[in-house]
Length: 366
Image (cartoon, rainbow, N blue to C red; front, side):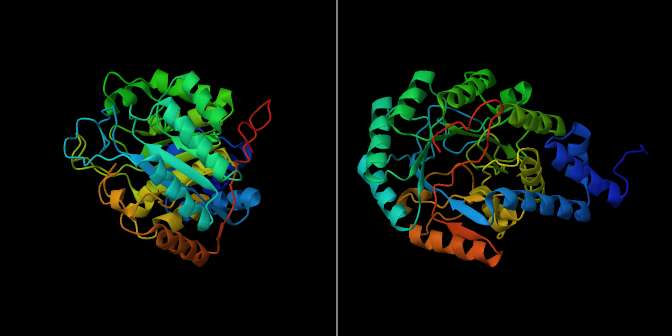
């Protein structure tokens, strides 16, 4: 058997400590941690948890998620709202409906609103800018996050000038061949990366991320994802398990695992300590304590659904999504109880990132 530095528990702990001290990881260290036993993983998660607490304390930030359209021009092979899915029950929320979601959320203590949707041409730049400026006018102390896909730099600039603070755009994979496997020909990794760097340059707090266990993913593609995160220095990283959707080309593929997602959350916390790291709905979907265990692996953000209950099942990116029927207040109070049960506190706060980029002050409005 190949001799490695990882064959004793002391050496395994030294490996985790070394990753934490360097805020970096080698490909061999990643492979080791993805296959390590329970004692090593427990220590990895403990160190990630302590790292998060040293920067953010035991505060858990809530984002009010508003899924405002499930129309999408793209045809990504893993996504339930892809344009070729004729079984999707399409909807769009009006501006009035979205503002009503914000009103409900504000009363429940939300100070960040996340507007997420497919790449829907109906929502022009003018409509998005009007929405953003209206939210900021009504709730000036709140942050607005957009997650509406690939746009031109000029469009991103307009949203920012209208008041948008943050932008979430999962890169999905930093490996060209893997990207091609997951997406149709008209989409490109080069353009996805261009978007993320444009957003950073404009001044947004930027989020990237990937699915854990997506079809074709390997240790090497995951390592490229981690290298990209180190290079981009995002303010947020969203990862969650791949969950197949029954009306997509990947319907019969295996889902990503709970265990691997927790390991990777912890690794990301150690190599990029100040990042905002959500414990995602997808993680809660594949395990009844998913979001709690995500927090215990270094996550510090949860995103309850503020969308009208009548449309939640329609935003079916993947199968068996949780919280499709709860009212917003029920979802918020449920999450608060869950976080308190593990010793954390859901706070009424914008929850800005504390990432400081190399050679410059923190990007985005803080």
